[in-house]
Amino acid sequence: MTMPVHNITTHFGISQDFDSMVNQLRFTLLFLVCLLSNGDLPGQSIPDTTTAQQSIMAEVGGFGSSAAQTPFWLRSRQYGTVPLTGPAGLVRVGLTKQFGDYRNSQKLHVKVAVEGVANVGTSSQLILPVAYVSLFSKHFELYAGRRREVFGLADTLLTSGSYAWSGNALPLYKIQFGTRGYVPLGFTKGIVAVNGMYAHGWFNNTDSIQNSFLHQKALFVRISLFRNRVRLYGGLTHYAQWGGSSTVYKNGTTVHGKIPSSLQTYKDIILVRQPPNDTTQYSHFDLINQAGNHLGSIDMAMEIDNNKANWFLYYQHPFEDKSGVAFQNMPDGLYGIRWKNKQTDAYRGFRLTQITAEFLTTLNQSGFNFNIGSRLYNGADDYFNNYQYVDGWTHRQRVIGTPFLTRWLDSREDVHDLKGGYKNYSPMMISNNRVQVSHLGLLGQWPSGIQLRALLSYSRNLGRPISSDPRAPLSQFSGMAQLMLPVPWVGGTQLNLAVALDQGQWLTNNVGGWLSLRKVIQKRQ
Image (cartoon, rainbow, N blue to C red; front, side, top):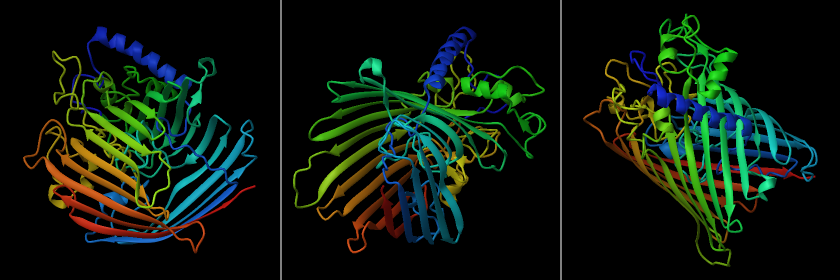
């Protein structure tokens, strides 16, 4: 969030002595991040373990529901490929091809991947969620394009979504360099490993700002203890939308319709520095706030591994300014625990293989007072909103972070006017960023190979900070049950059946279903 331009304090504003100390600490931390950053899905990652020289995937399916709006768990965390309204049919085709001997990890390899999704229905569209070229070795990778990614320490299969980058929106085009998972540091005998990335990307044009950029970096450290039975994790993700131009906003918010995008501005974005006092380049908005829309999370986790199970406990702490970095917005964040069943003894019936339980709270937001006064930090962080980039932390009509911080367009019609935020400003795109969510994910399997996956979420939705709506809190339940059935008479094929339900005061009451058939063909050397 960036505060409105009337405020006399800076977006990261604090007392001068303390500000100097924080600037030094911040510079040191972010310098280390820049120095060590490299990565593919930092934190609890989804490593690319594909060894096939070529893989072809095809899927055909469709969905429908009792209301025009697609049920929450059919459309959320689908990388923007499932329409917001239905019914619709879907055709998905993907190709991945690898060049080089993948069995020789010491050599460089090239991978090319593309995936197209065609939706035919009330909102027909053709989407490319995957389109990239990658150059990689055993530990490092450079890629250009877009691909599916999740960032942060969290379970990736049954989660409600990582706080800042959850896989909910269509991926951005970017150039990224980083590690491939965790890379052990040799001088620590493998006890310490690092995982990081650094990227520059491009946003699609929004309603208010065109041609803006993405700055993204992350660094995670893993410490293995007790013969790798216990692993401790810690790290940071930092994102910024910056630069661009506007035909809507002129002087004050921009300088003659321009937002700074020079190399000097880029350095300030990387190091999160206050811009120079140059009114010919920087607007009043930039000078009292910060160049760019910054946000991210500070993550920590512990993993415990034994012969029977794997336990993963994690916490993602959100920040949008210095108050969040200094943990003034506690207890805000995503809390989670994941249990994986490692027992492989023969079984005759249903076997539960994973449970993920999470709790997300964003009610504090460093308090609701803009003005510092006797306070060390300003409050009203207004997560995912920004007064320059008024579409907020979104891409192609989807929230980039957790899908439970929602746009007003995604709520039911009678709460489109939910009150909140600063009274003299128009409603923001993210109308609901003060939430509490209890989430449960379950995964199980029968001996036949049939899998059952369930996502169950209950939320309390309170709008935005500063002012509250008398209708809040608005309660909401969203759930989904999915069956994945192997089709033996068509090798490598899976039938997917899902039923989803929305019931409550925030989303349109709805029940819907999904049916698809998916085929994968792999060719090895």
